[in-house]
Amino acid sequence: MKNNIKTLQCIVFFLSIIFLSITCSRTIKYTFTIYGEKTLLNGKEFLVKGLRCSNALISDETTDELIANLDTFIYYGINTISVYFMGSRFGDVKGYNEDAAINPVYAARMSRIIEEANKRGMVILVGCLYWSNSKAKWDRWTQANANHAVANTVSWLKKHNYRNVFIDVDNEGMAQNAKGFDNRQMIIAGKKVDRNYVIAANFKGDPPPEADLSIHHSNRVDGKPYIESEGTPDNAPGGYWGSYSKKDGYYNYINIGIYNEDMKTSQKTETAEHLNKGNGYMLASTWLQCVSPYGPNHKPGGLGSSNDPGIKGWLEYIRSLYGPYILPSRADTKKIVNDR
Image (cartoon, rainbow, N blue to C red; front, top):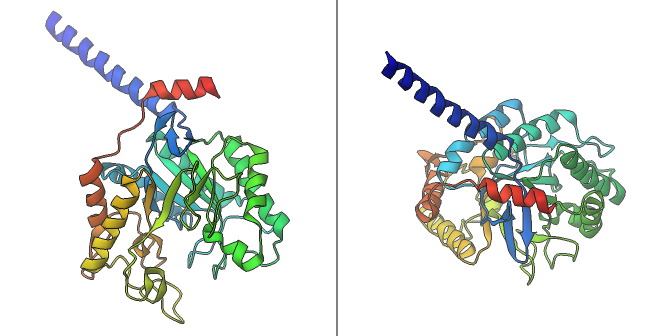
């Protein structure tokens, strides 16, 4: 009888420890920062390995699927996801109202993604403007509206104390190209709200001094980190985002999640080159970004053939290089909290 009681006490004790560990891990606030040319999470060097899920806010179902697969992506070594308030192509998510306020429906979905990512020590790239042919844009917006949208985004993040994030103010500088919006002003508008948020430049050319890092289109410059936030194979016939994935008169992607062998090799080569230099790399794919009835697909899928579309082959490659993503330690979290 005494042995049974002791056994039961031991079981209760260990279950309590497990419960407390889980509870504590879910209350940690992970913080994304930079130091020199390095990206950090809770003060610890953090090499971004991610996925571009820009249409994740289309519906509750697409948001649910992304959240349901976060642990799967962690298994493959993924630690970062990008999600856009405006756009993206074919998704037409109107995450901002015409007055540049964040639409509460899309804010609620973004909140869920950020909070679930935080529980896992993952980072979210929060995208603001997405122009081009997306129907999510507001054609009457001026520079002031664009600045307010970015400022409102940072204010919203600050209000909720979401710190496991960084911000892209203008995807590929599309609004800059189409409307002449000055990305530097948009970055400054965000920094005025809270200078501690990491804000990226994403247009062709050198990033302005106020930008914390360069992503995708912006040049890699000394003194700032660089992340390829939209990595694709450079040898797709007709260009990956050109005729390979789009055709006139059709409002969705084609060749969804399909790669020939040369494209797969190119994707892996580019991935390794960026990561080996200490630059982050995030995979972009029609598999992840296509819209109904074919997606978005927030799951690995298959190995990329026409009969087995998906991004599982690239994910397996990341896992072969780095193993699963391991969460940062709590000790680093305390240091960041004390230093802030």
